[in-house]
Image (tube, rainbow, N blue to C red; front, top):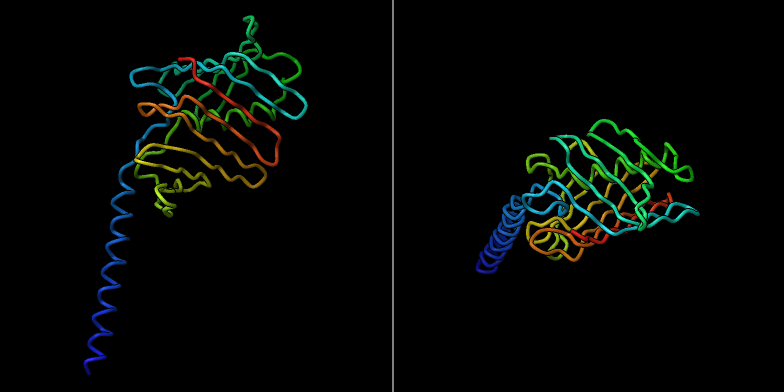
Length: 201
């Protein structure tokens, strides 16, 4: 009888600890920033020195990204000498190529870049996230009705994985300072598209 009581007590203790860990995870899952580490506080623009590698083409220069309206953005890549390589406006639903040099004037490329830039500028709302798991100090969430996954540490976004059927996008934010990332890397697979951005301001 005493052995049975000890077993029951042990089970209750284990269940209680498990419940507390789950509750802790769920409470942690409520503390995330509803913004990406892109724009500085009070600013609607960001400027980076960066590069694009797409198959056999490589371009580098100055990236300027600006929010012109609530859901309207503009992205420009200029060479170091000031020549515009491409100029693109976009919203949540569509994009418009204002200008582009011929070697990279590919509809498929800018369709991919449109997806990238949307992930960069549009963080999901808290109510749109489903808590998935915890890996050490990193909390992982999935956005409702999508295959987009967001990873947070200390409530700040660290990376994004978007798992399409024919293409995967991995965005990593590093060198964070005051909730803003000074280094952003965007990698596609199996498509050979990669972008590296280093903040200027």
